[in-house]
Structures are given as C-alpha cells and as structure tokens.
Image 1: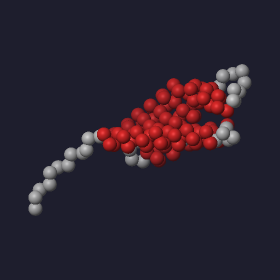
Image 2: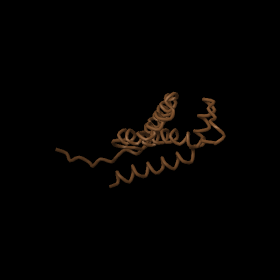
Image 3: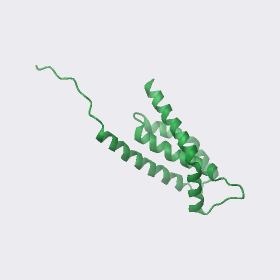
Image 4: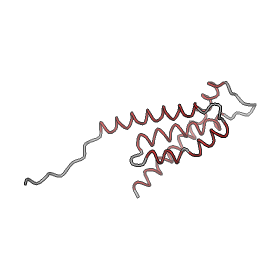
Length: 127
C-alpha cells in the first residue's frame, strides 16, 4: 500500500508541476522554433506535454524506487501520442527534454543515495 501511495503522490506532484510550468516550456518552445502560431496564445497548451515529459522522467528517475522505468513508460504514453500527432517535425525536442530530465534525475538519485544513512544490520551471532 505504501508503494501505491508513493507512486500516486509522485504523479500528483508531476501533474501539478507540469500545470504550473507549462507556459514556461511553451514559451521556450516557441522561441526556439519561431513558431508563434496564430493570434491565440497556445503556449501553455504546447508546453503542458513538454513539462509533463520533463517532470515525470525527472521525479520518477530520482525518487521512483522499484519499477520506476515501467511507471515512466506507461506515464509517457499520452504525451508521446500528443507529440506524434501534433508535432512530428520536432519530435527530437521532447526526446532531448526527456534525456536531460533522466540525467538530472539519475544525478539526484545518486546524490541522495550517497548521503542517505546506511541501514542498520542486526549483529550476527558468533559461531
């Protein structure tokens, strides 16, 4: 049960952080590719799957525990479908975001493991 609540909590944090930072990712995308669209500002709509890819990969790599890559793979299905359907020309950008997020998450995971207190083992009985 603890396993489920940890994964569900991480997913809630991913969704919240994605929603909050979607306009940042969308504006960055529009500036890099000079794709300003029409008179309607859709930067937050464009940035939502990009932010979701970043935070899902980053947080589950850093704090996911067991089966973290399975959760990342299943969680990325909607974002990948969105990117393939709407922006196949720039598919390398979400892949680069995912790679950067994975590297940052892996580095944070190693740093956390290094500074975590070692588990106490019970003393063994002499034979």
